[in-house]
Length: 191
Image (tube, rainbow, N blue to C red; front, side, top):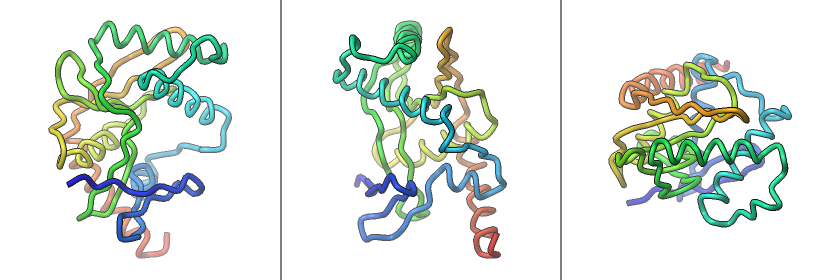
């Protein structure tokens, strides 16, 4: 069975089919031990969102590259180079899922094949952070009822280059479980 949540962008809120509010993967990471220090309102975060949308539209064959804003063009070119170099084959974009037993949800940037292996990729326009592996571990858990994820990556994109970094998503899942437990304790104690 596919567990697809409903999503309200204002407040970044997910809900299960029965209306139960779900914690988000990044919210759990932020709330667990304060590992996630992302500020959504910054211009840098907004630019990252624009890059994500550009890649989604490109992958879905719904992007008119001639109308693309100049600052986004080099990021798209770096993405195309990464796809060629690593034989990335797009399968799905912006896949929302939730875990019905543990009640958390997230949106996976891309499900794909990388060098022939079933993979997921999270796009990043910022620097490498230690919590990225936890995020990928949680995302792979969200997909396990449908497909077996063999590899999990962050694709770090900059205007002048890219870096495809593999993470151990099985270890990331174990760490995410610990962070989720810590987040529940913090919430229960009013922090």
